Image 1 (cartoon, rainbow, N blue to C red):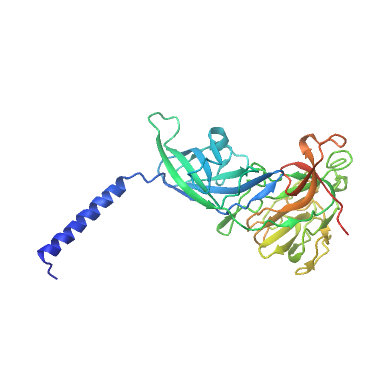
Image 2: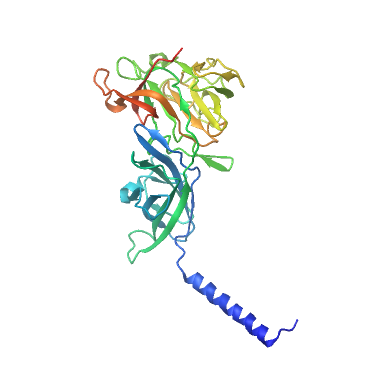
Length: 384
């Protein structure tokens, strides 16, 4: 094909223009070489007396040098407004964990080449603030190994968006009455909050809002001696369904543990011990775990009503003492699902478990809320 001189000139001009554009684009700063993912959007929920948004950012370093996350800012809707939260230094290090490390590993803001870090976020929304429809994030990184000298090269990821979910939070009745401690309950640094499961090629955080419920007895403690399961005040407590629903999973026959002694080994098959899962909404599943073997009263696919007895509190699976592990997830699995929030209609807050005294404690009524980590609460008797 032959081109006219004019057409040839236009064609060559286009090539020159494209070349210049590419050179300018390559020269322009494109921000840090990271991949950022929010695996599950936050659902607004009231924890204790505060409205919070709970979620994670998974940050993978695709650079050839370490990247240190120097500062993280979270904005409501857009980054044009004042930040809801600015996190840096030790506070930022404390909410970052390198993928694959166990809970309680060394805190660090630095992400090595080809490494992934998880940033655990817990954003409180003031009572005078509306819940945002989305969140945006500004992340400032420093490239290179900290402390090696020379000018640190800063790069910034601007306006990384995260939608705020509009999903309804299930309103539950308690699985029992009386005084209970919310062990490892909702907080940004509890063992449940930091638990991530990698199974069948996917990672999940099923325990974001999980609670290990431990009954508090008349001596202000969880037990009256620790050598036998029967010494624990909650042992054998009837466990009640927290909502109407359908039984979708049952595991029974796992033997109980001696208090303070874990089974060997703990596996994916026995980690929850004996348990029942009840589907309480189209994509909401309540798990009741560590039950006594042989105590489960319901059948698979049985429809249960709020307050029906499901089984009895025990000490099976990954448990060192009798307690009820309770969580709500978006899937019919203890581990291969995402933890979602829930609230109770009414309870009374009796103070933190660390200094709870039977005869000397606050008594604060709370409504449509979930207890926080290690809160001691009293649930009213179940309605007949």
